[in-house]
Length: 399
Ligand code: ADP
Ligand code: MG
Image (tube, rainbow, N blue to C red; front, side, top):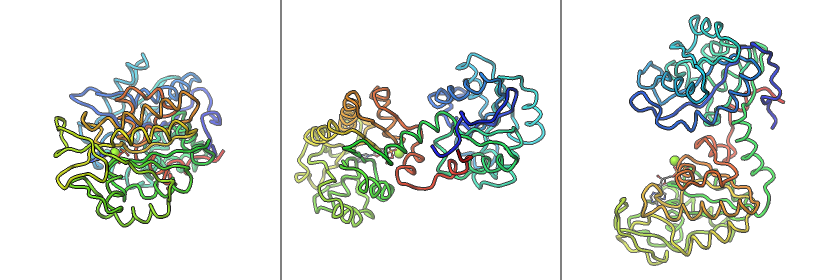
């Protein structure tokens, strides 16, 4: 890790620390419907409050578009955080400015204040320097624990880190961010081999950079999901009425040429006349997909073939489901790959699942604890795997 972490934080008891968390959770009828993201921040928060620090928490929630929006208030999130911590958590309806600063200053050592949604402010997503400076004025040091936002340069992420450093404070990575960077970074820089990458999901063009990066580093690239359909088309196979990324077909052909036998495509598919939760399905070799068929998942032979590769892997990086995993008739391939990766992990492989939908599928299958790491950030993990810049991380203090 080339950036400062909690271990390097030059804070003293009573210091006011600004912590950027990812509390972008679903809220329904004023209640938090899924508190996974809140729970994930507890180690960092507990570690800081145990030293007597006073914390001001910043987060975005939803896309209120730079204006206050009652439904996107963090107030219910502050309440839920308090329940999880078993302590009262305070809330500031102002995100910045004199009132917010005054509230922060009245905190007792170990107390936490959640400030209102950063995206209620117009400068947030534009990374306005004045807003970044106003965030930095809330404390003396900055901890970023919001991995899901590091691929964006916003005022409360990259801007705040730079503004805090300009004031002479530290800007460091929290435990969650540190863990994400360690797992994803090690997998890319120094993977145990064989290194097997599994890519799926909907579109090829969205994930070109990831495919290229994985082709350069991995020993095997297993392709599933609708992404495979685009490769099938490039092979001249019938894909019927399946989802194909038309713009990506030429590119898929070029990628396949360069990859040789390191890239493996499914050999069979689960097909149906419609993609629906109650669809009647059948399995077909990939050369026998009909003109009216829709491909919804990888077939049994492909699951065994991918499973064999995963069983031998020492490093597994997985992004994107193998099929329409949110519908039971088409979820089997994704679950099979998740099980194979989990089994390989049990015998010593390092396994990382990233991507919003794939991570959700791993959790839904009850296999999250059987992976070495399930990434919390969909877009951020994709950007990391693609080797794109991560402004929220770059802006932190160098170790
Ligand atoms: P992630 O969020 O893990 O990065 P993506 O967002 O790229 O994954 O892709 C997930 C979506 O791809 C899911 O909504 C899933 O239904 C869809 N998908 C996967 N395979 C197919 C397929 N064969 N046909 C249609 N949609 C598919
Ligand atoms: Mg997705």
